[in-house]
Amino acid sequence: MSEIQEVARAAAEAFKFGTKALETTEKLVSFVAKVFKEPIRDAVGIIGDRLKFMRWERQTRLADRVNEILAQRGVTETRAVPLKLALPVFENASLEDNDELQDLWAKLLANSMDPNFTKEIRYAYLEIIKSLTPLDVRILYVFYNTLSNMKIDWDNMTNYMVEKEQICKDLSISPQDYDVSMYNLFRVQCLGPAIRTGGVKLGTEPLTIYKGIDAVVMTPLGKSFVEACIK
View 1 (tube, rainbow, N blue to C red):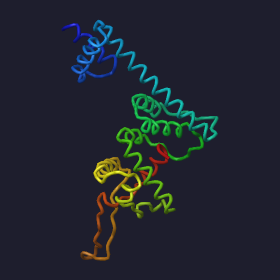
View 2: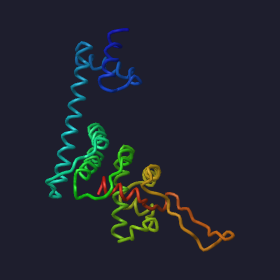
View 3: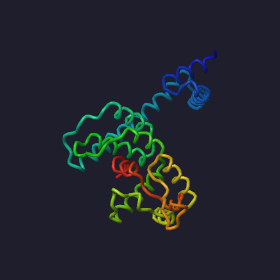
View 4: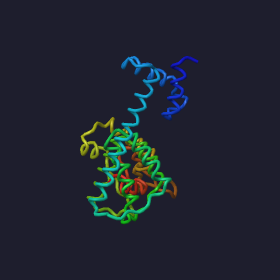
């Protein structure tokens, strides 16, 4: 085994890259050594220090945002957060370099710490956040606000739909961008297609009209997710 292969393997394990990323790690170590004109082993230290700094920087921002949210609410006494929830939040938030997405982790953590937040915190939210893009988040936020402004009966939220044209107009996005985000939001079960029952019957069963992504409803999971992580 060459020096670079040996060092890359150690680096992959140390930085939690995994053995599948070994070839990429070799290229990265070799490249950094070339850029900085440093020995290969020193290049690993440069990569490691930068990764540690980036994660420290993002963790610091997370702490600042959580403290800011709690301060705005006037919360001075917090409750303990289960390790099963807290550790994945710290881990994922420290890797998230988009502020809009990291804010979801911050709000989830703040609500978990806030004794006045009485809604259920589900572990499923962790996977949902990891699956979203900034546009997905904005669509959910606009969707929730649209329904709130309509003063709907939340117990029957699936009776209220929002149409594609309205969301595209409110967010100034293309129909193509809307389509991609909507299918992803369907996938994580936050939104779903509007289904309406028509007056025509087939036998004893009324025919239903499936709207696909052209007219959409918010699911109970979507509502609870927005309230725990976005709102």
